[in-house]
Image 1 (cartoon, rainbow, N blue to C red):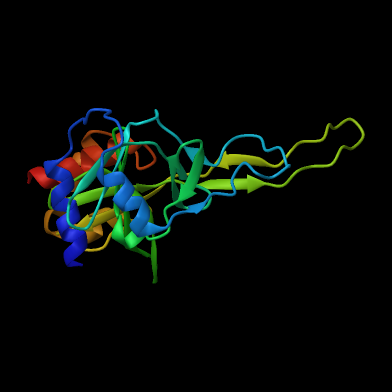
Image 2 (image 1 turned 60 degrees about the vertical axis):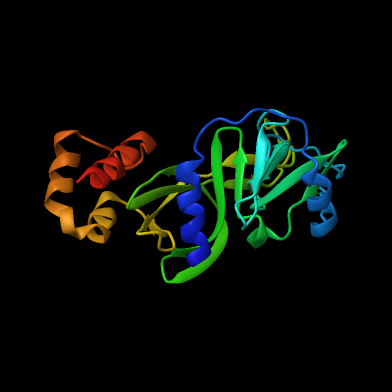
Length: 226
């Protein structure tokens, strides 16, 4: 809990663009310490439609250690389907397996945290994207689904296995507690009960929709302004 709180505090301080510098001297030390293993993604002979990845420009990413040391100028992609980050060295991608030691990763302008979160009655771990924060913080969980290949039929062509986006899932954290999944505005208002009347009026008067990320962000920012 303490480490998660420190990381959230750190992201508020560092939410600025960083230069796309060459790999720093610390990178080799990081490489030796963490023993990354090669990603098998892309080695299969199967051809897929779509992609399991969230990718950004080369050299636009950064890792933050638990000590808050940042190593920037990296190329990292997020395998959403497997919920794993992969770092590039030379022409090969390697899986970041010790996620707890490298819990804050910047992909371009996006901030991802590897954390424990509450999904209903279950505690899980994985990557959540930071959206906006303060006393209450909003996170987004990306998702991909793999649709099986279809064999050709009369009047129907064959289709390859296909990666498609799943609907995003949203979580909120109050006072740096572990994020909790919310499925609608009613659940958000219940968790943020001290200002439930004001929030209900704000949502209704502005005709906000839960399925719109920008509307969710407005609700959390409104709560943090009270």
